[in-house]
Image (cartoon, rainbow, N blue to C red; front, side):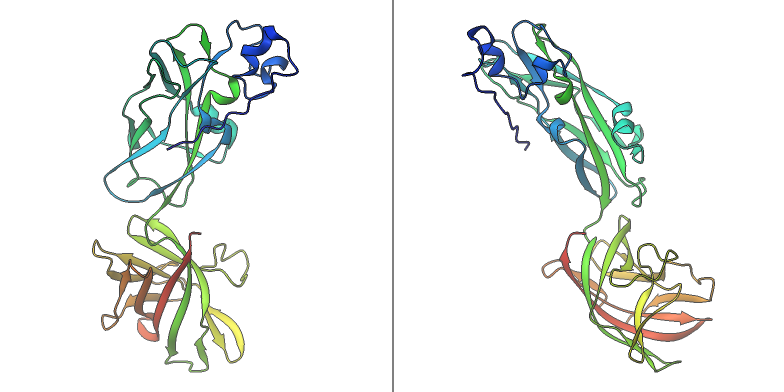
Length: 321
C-alpha cells in the first residue's frame, strides 16, 4: 500500500570505492553525517519509506468495534537483494509524536493493538512481505481532538544493516471522521412562525463535523460571527435582505445504523442559554442517501418550550473537509 521513493546519487562523480554506497543512499546525509552512520562499512540500510513524509495524515472512521489499519512496510536498501531473511523489530515511540507536534494527543494504549512488532524481508527480496498493522477501536476517542502515534525501528537481525535516522521513525497524525463528515451545500426552506420577516438563506455551505460515531455538528462556512462561533455554529438566516443567524442555535444530527436521522438537538444545549432547543419533525424524510451523498432532514427550532421555526433541508455532499 505504501510507495517507497528512492533517490539515487549519480555514481559518475564519485570514486569506485564509494560506488556501492552512492547506489543505496537517499541523499548526501551519509557523507555529511546527518544519519550518524559516517564510516559505516557495507552501506546496507533498512528504512521506512513513509517516514520521509512525517507526519502522515490518517483519517479513521469513528465507530464502534475494531478496525484493521495497514500502515507501512520496510525496505532493504542495498546494491543486491537480501541474501537471507531479515527481521526488523518496531517499537512505539511517544517522544517522536511530541517532538513532531506537541498539540497531538498520544493515541491511548487501550485503543489499539499491534498484530506483530516484527516485519520480515525474505531472502531475495527488498521489501517486507508483511505490513505493519494495527487493530484500532475509535469508539472512546474524542472526535474533536487529533491523536498521534509513532513507531521506530528498534532492532535489525542483520548486523551489517542500519537504519538511517531520517527514515527510521514513522509518525501518524490521526483524525476521526464518520461517513457523514464533509463539506455540504444546504438547500431547502424555513418558516419562522413568530417573526415571519426572518427567512431561509439558501443555498449556503456548511461543514458537518464528526462529534461521535453516528453524530455530526452543523458549522456554517460562509460568514464570520466572531470568536463565539469558532466553527460557525450558528444557523444562517435572512432578516429581510440582510444575512443573519439564530444565535446559540445549530443543529446536531444523530443517525441510526440504517442512515436514518433519528434526532436533532441543539449544539448549544437543550435548551441553550437563551432557551433554544431543537427537535426532529417525524413528517420529514430524515435520512442519509449513500448513493447521492445527500441528507434530507426536517426539524424545529424550539423557543421557550414552543415550536418556533421549521426547517426542511437537503444537505448535498461536495467534498471532504
